[in-house]
Image (cartoon, rainbow, N blue to C red; front, side):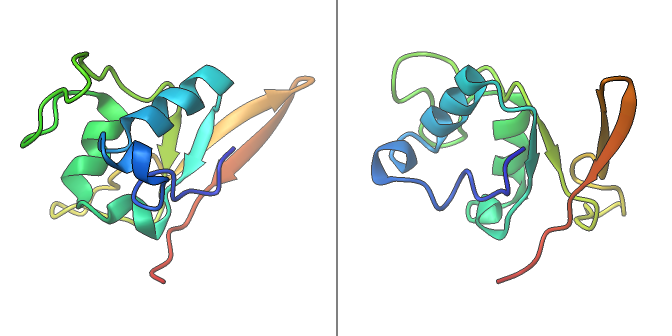
Length: 111
């Protein structure tokens, strides 16, 4: 699990490509869950949703010549709501360890 701020607070080389390299690196490492951090909203909620679900950046499409698929992990933010009052991402996720369910819940703070 990651504590968030994977995008927005990343190294310059990742930021130049709208943090897609950081997400791709997390995919390769096998990250399962990411608690959404305040910097994950630096480019707005629509960009966070694009990073989670994949797609072309609205202004600088595919700068590296390849399309961006998506994050292979879940974003969690129980206290972030869209304009309709729905959570922007999942509020919690359950994982099983030796048959024991463990719930992960993430809250985003403004800092």
